[in-house]
Image (cartoon, rainbow, N blue to C red):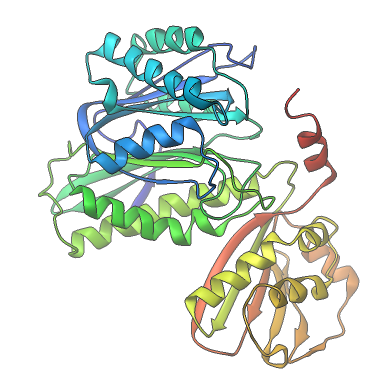
Length: 407
């Protein structure tokens, strides 16, 4: 597998377009479209929040029906959540606008929204935006990059990646883009994500691979402990690479799943590092836990703690905060077996060993924790399982951004 240039348009047959629809933002593109003329088998994962946006309900229905998908229309600025029947009707009108302009069934188009909750979408602007994008669809890598920018809200950077790998002598391309900066927490973390591939694979295997990979990537990040109403991750496969159809869990399936993991992990870490107001990527790596699930709980608890995140921002090697977060994670463990280290590009520092603190150089600790990624490394000495979670520091700017987000 190798990383290549591009994102959602890197795979054969996929095009993208953007436009300025002026839905909420007045000075930037705020609609994007990803489209494949060839129908795609599709897998998806969605928010676990009981309050689901209209677009999430629309997409879940399509994915679970097993019907082929041709693409997705995304808007930023307004989330289309808590909008009742009017919000669901906006999804249908958006999809029907694609049907009218590109002659594909409206039920083959997914829709996604991100932004302020509780506002109705201006359907006339959505329809006008779709009409414009249908005439400007482009398979260039630049078109994919522009799409990744158009779906941003409080993100400070766009997030995209593409990889290539071999399956049965055929070159397969997998690309993706995502957005997410605030209201991010596991199950399934706040985000919109769209993955495209020219692989030929059966739908049930595509869904199984995605669900397994999400558990160790997107479900292992947190920015602020809030799970969004709009989380949507769609994976579309149009089969244009002409490989022998993957219809069982063989070596080709595992090769694909490994590539999918790399793409999803990359996007997940980019989202964690770009948390609202963040200055650092905050990683927790727990090893030698009793079970995989316990390792996950421990690492997620560490990066989700507001006090831990504040310590990371302040370059404060206050190990008690991280141990405290582990203690209320729901995992029963013996603190007298635990070792805790801080790691970064500047080096490594052990601060806790077998139940007692260790003396350390505060100046060196500050230097180590001033890097753009800080890792809390924990050895549980209680088994053989491990897990990694990703978050970010908690800064003054997080409050500033969210205090006036609606206005």
